[in-house]
Each structure stands twice: as C-alpha cells, then as structure tokens.
Length: 241
Ligand SMILES: [Mn+2]
Image (cartoon, rainbow, N blue to C red):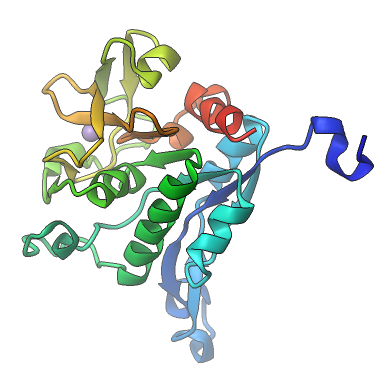
C-alpha cells in the first residue's frame, strides 16, 4: 500500500470555477489595487464538495484548462453572470449583468477537455447553461420571474419533476422543491444534451449528457439548507472517485 495515497481512500480533487472581479470590488479602501484582477469563489460550493467527501480546488481563470482536467478528478462549474450571447449565435438583448469573456472561454475550454477525458462534471446555474451552450444549445436571455434576487436564497420557488430513468431522477424524490436565482433559462438543447428536470411550467431545471458523467441543475443546491446532504454533490464526488 502506498502510504502517500491513503490506501485507496484518497479523496477526489474537484476543480471549481470562479468569477473574475477587480480590486475595486474586494480591496476596500486601497485604490492602488483597484485595477488588479482577482477571482472570487463562493464558499457554499466548496462546502458542498467538502461535505460530500471531496477536496475542492479553486481553478484560476488564467490557467490552462487541459492541465486542470488532467489533474482534477471532477469539475464543478458554478453560478455567475450571463454567458455572452454571441457564443450561441445571438445579439445581446439585456445588459442586466456584465459579461465575463475570460470566464466564458475558460469554462468552454474546460468542457472541451472534460468531454474528451470523460471527466465527471456538475454544472450549477450558469454552469448548467455553460453545459448547454458548449454543446451548441441556446438560452432565453431574460426570464425575470426566475430571478427573485431580493428573496432569501433558501426560498423554495419551484417544485421540480424528473424524467424517468434519469440520473437526477435517481437522486431526488419525485417532486423536489428548489430555489431560483437566475434570469436566463435553457432554450434550444445542445447536441447530446437531454433535459431531465422541469419546473411547473416546463422550464428546464436539469440537464444530462447520456454516456458521459455530466449533470447540471438550474437551481442552487449549495445555497439551500439541505446543502450538506444534497445528493448531487455526493453524485459528483462518487463519480470522481
Ligand atoms: Mn427558476
């Protein structure tokens, strides 16, 4: 037994994507730092991975995504700002959120490498949308009734149902109540992407890529009170082991 590998009990490394900000967003009253780039990672995502038995690793947006995929055992693509609509062949119709082209290109390249390597990927919110856009799908650019940005993040706003025989349907109860913190939704499905969870109005709340360990949800399990026992984090960590 290799003592450095824990006898097969090594916890999987889960790479987590982050958000591009600048010093002016985080450096308080130090104007010298205002133009310096910084990356922000919401702690609730890493907590979900820790609770499921994985080791979260923050991935700098300026690293080579192929290196990340080679060293990580799984990926968690997190929530964030709108994907640039030119990436799905549309003009922008909303400027509600600033775009982050560096993050767009990093996460799409991560997906290229993850698909090539059949690496497990969990997408949440923007990550769910990235998985669809990466596969050639599109988004509805502004569906404001989904973004209750002033309500507590734990507020249950949809009852989600699941496609028969899906990965998500195997993880959650038949009717599952979820929060909602997004203003864009999946429109045309990408190639090889299947919608497997829906809200009451048929909006796509979950995606999978049959044949690959890729699953995503539009809601925010990492922000719900059930986070530390949410089965989707366990799914990612188990797939990555
Ligand atoms: Mn919603």
